[in-house]
Length: 235
Image (cartoon, rainbow, N blue to C red; front, side):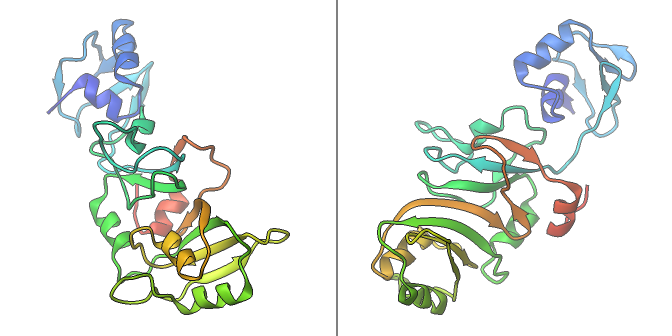
């Protein structure tokens, strides 16, 4: 059982204040009967909830693509910093969390979900999921640097990094697209340091079958059915 106002939020009807206003105006019905307050307890999997006559559905799992902006921490909650979950206001789904993390000063693609099994698959070191970053550096990225990154470099861990894929950006001596299959702490920054360079801008543009596209920074969208299928999930 769940409070009706909380269920409406998790169904994506709106924020808590928006849901409260909807209820007061009689826009919400439960099993065909208008309900004006949100404190009523309902069974989320069997109840019929409509907003303005249109049925709302409760999905046990939810999947979103977020364009994380720089300056926001990748965490569910933080006492002092703004988190990526603060950007997910109005998203349907219970107990959402980010899959993996991006550094505070890094921007780009984050998958937000409540599917723990999917998160485990994507983050498992054995799966070698591709993650591609747009990297701008302090100095020119030389051919020798690219060769070192592609072979794997020592970054102070027990083992060198696995081989990466590097593509230099046209007309940009200090820019590359770097694809890695691991997720070590500050990995991209440490890899560039290992070849004598320094990252000045970092943006993740893809993870597995997901691509950031033109989604504006700070915005999110639900995954498409095609994207969910590519990740091996349904619904």
